[in-house]
Image 1 (cartoon, helix red, strand yellow):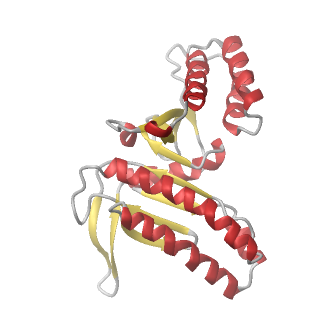
Image 2 (cartoon, rainbow, N blue to C red):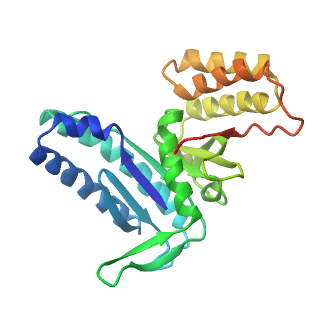
Length: 255
């Protein structure tokens, strides 16, 4: 299940005429849809600036996890290419967030006797939507759920957080596919390893050690919102009365 959403779409729509907005969306959705089809995806629907797609139906796809992530990574590359094209037309900058989740879903022709659509329903779908919404919070472009990350080969992943999303009681891990494993440079791999080391210190409640490590990472990437998120949490948690079974999960109270 993949959700992709244009960020700050309200601001973009206010800056364009109705005709310009229609053209932007059509010229955006067409190559995005082609990428999803290329990687065996099924388009569920377009809702405003959001595209929703899934894998494994109507045809089975044994590599549904990998195909969904490859589609998302190529989608994000295409958005970067579209930026210059849209800029030449005088359109506002377009950025997107993507969320991917894997799980059992109800799929079929659903609706009323007057109108139906081939779509999916279920908790796994809802979580995919929540993950897309969290990309902006963490300052990343793509988040995948732990079920998607399982048994996934060929990608360099970094654990972003353990989260409890609104409407769910159990925490789930969410990951960012940083790069293809084969093309990831040694510097990128070292940076991801250093991040995971800082995260380990955070989960072990070694606040001073975690703070120092995240501050070092932030020096190398001063615009990285993720490091800032953890540094702010450390300041709060170091004086908090945490339960004995604290597992580091963070509760998001809004959708």
